[in-house]
Structure formats: structure tokens, C-alpha cells
Length: 198
Image 1 (tube, helix red, strand yellow):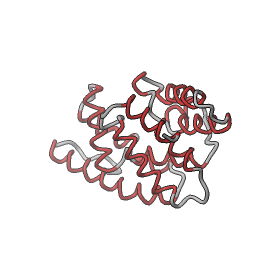
Image 2: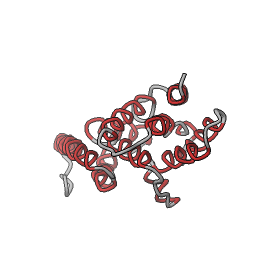
Image 3: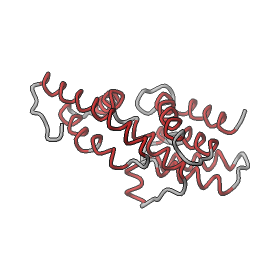
Image 4: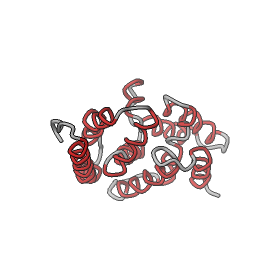
């Protein structure tokens, strides 16, 4: 099995089938990464695929998940004799995908693959999938419906400003529109006031 295939199997094993952050999330991120990379000038497919597969493997350990994922990635790649520069680029991509970890540690992307992964991961937070993920997370965290809807305004509808590629921004526009409409309908059905910007 090739390196990307081994990384895929590790992600499948460690993350399970949870919709929000399990292996199905990794598959969706990979689909977005494929679309984004088709418009990138030059990229390393193996570096991108390995980074996508490993970006959330530390989630079962808690937060900051990007840190734990980067430790697992480093050990996984080091145990396979990967080149030091390749390992550092994967670790950087894994750390850079997490907005909160980037803010905490002031991490800058070292490769186009890190930017592709970051965009692809953020796109999966939008659209109807984003609505489902936000509510699943809200229920698990004990958030009220109003708090979850506020999360749309506070974070999800600002994702587009964090994206690196034109193709990502185009995709985000449509996905944000879907999320906005779903949030508006939900507020109407729940008798909640409409928020600014929605």
C-alpha cells in the first residue's frame, strides 16, 4: 500500500464513522481538496492526500486537535522513513488547517498544499452539511438552538474571508447562501428574530 493509502487507513481506524469529524468528514475534505487542487498551478498530490487524511486524526485525544494530529502525523511519517522536509510540510499543513490553532500559535502556511487543505476543511463547515455538523456539535456540547444559530453568524458566515483560492471563494458563496437560507428558515419556524447579515 502506498503512503497515502496507509494514511487513509489510519484515519479510518482512528476517526470512525461520525458525521461531523469522523472519516466521512475526511472524505468530504478530500473531495473539496481535489476540486481546489485542479485549479492550483503546481502541487504535490502525495503531500496533499497524506495531509488531508491525517489532519484530524488527533481529534479523539481532544483539543487542540491540530496539535495532537500533528504529533500523530510526525510519528506515522517518521516511522515510515519519510524525508524530513516532507514530514515538516505535512505537519505544517495539519496544524494550519485549524483556525483556532493558527490564531493561538501564529502559524503560517509553508506550502500550497497547506492552503488547499485549509480551504477544503473550511468549505465542509458550510452549506447544508455545515448546518448538520453545527447542530450535531451543538447537541453534543449542550448548546441551545439559539447558541448554535449564533455560531452561524459568529464563525460560519465569515469563513469566506479566510480562503486562499478563487475556486474556494466561488464554492463558499453558494454554500454560504444555502447555510443562510437554512438558518433563516429555522429562525422563522422557531419564532426567533432574524439576525443581521442573514
